[in-house]
Image 1 (cartoon, rainbow, N blue to C red):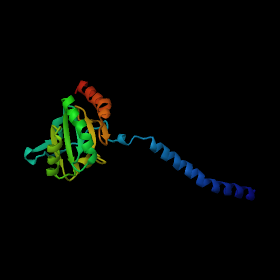
Image 2 (cartoon, rainbow, N blue to C red):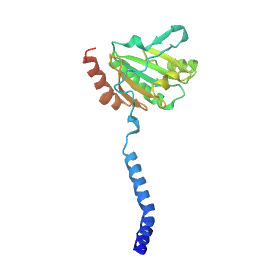
Image 3 (cartoon, rainbow, N blue to C red):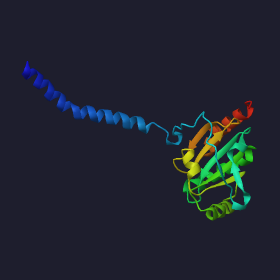
Length: 187
């Protein structure tokens, strides 16, 4: 009996690396099917983080997110040093032209003068431009990197998050339908 148990243990020990490899391969295969632009956010369906921050240029005063209650708005986190933000910028300009939604730009971990020069060159689609040079507001919003875009409803709840540069398809197929739906909902 002891010899039989030893044989079973030897076989199990020989199969253990194969079992571990198969489990790891299954996790990796699952990861390859995920869309990196759809990272889950614990903010979805919850109140948006409240903040007050300086507007750019600095002479414009402060922005208070509580002042946005009662309207649907979009928060776009970007920076002048961000190459994908250049790619995304025409899509934001298109959004600003297509819908009268407030487009709030959160300039994340950037030098304010660089941000303003960048917008002078590429155009400014933002209704409000917020300075987050230290990155504290972005941290409160759970920002992984730039660009990231959030849609906030009239009650101040985050309803959508997009990670990475928005494409025209993202705008047409995801964001605009959400914005249109939220515009129809009562406060």
